[in-house]
Image 1 (cartoon, rainbow, N blue to C red):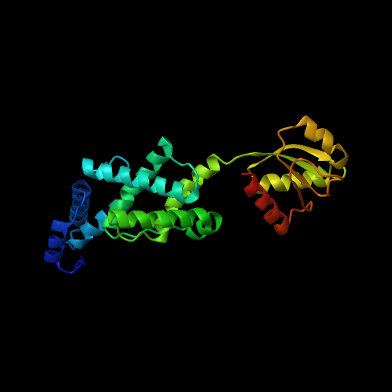
Image 2 (cartoon, rainbow, N blue to C red):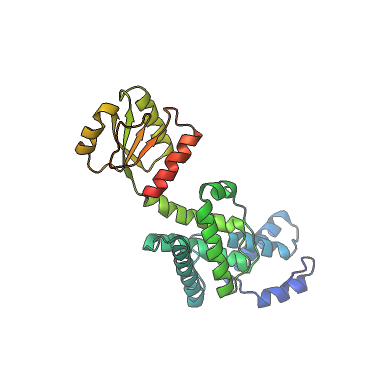
Length: 265
């Protein structure tokens, strides 16, 4: 329903049929009244509604859902979203910590949707690049939920914020891959390569830096090794994947290494 911002009667009619949080709206009205008293100017009634929208769009600790039904909807939508993302990504996300954190976001989000309030996500472009697959999965999941629960359109800004919750879970449970770094001598360029790998691949656990001649001995000493990153090709085939890169670990090397890491995970 469109609200005529210049017509107090139209606003009153709108408020009668809107499911507003009475406490927050009462706070808004009181703040407006205090402001009027302070500046000795009568403000338009719509200003109270604008302030209410701002409070709703903020995550205000201490304000809990008004009704059991509202609380139930938050929990159902939260759990359904997690289940839908799990189905789309074939990964497990359900745990009490994620449910609690995500529901604390979804509660004000549902209020924002009910009141047609949009928020800005300054990280959106970065999220779309860094977590592209997860962003698309969350977007598809939200589309399913919007149809099921008759939600207003959820824009990319909201989806970006929701994506971060799932991306955080992936980062926390990312599998660490035990790795050897190998160069001709095992020193110098290998240490440079090690520092670059640590800076770019947090899920690689560098177990040792070795020379080409000591590869077989190292694999016997460290049977848990899953990957060898080397600046030279090994003299013979070995039982674990070997990715050959330059000591400078250029963009092409990172792409190649990233593909192998994804495969191992």
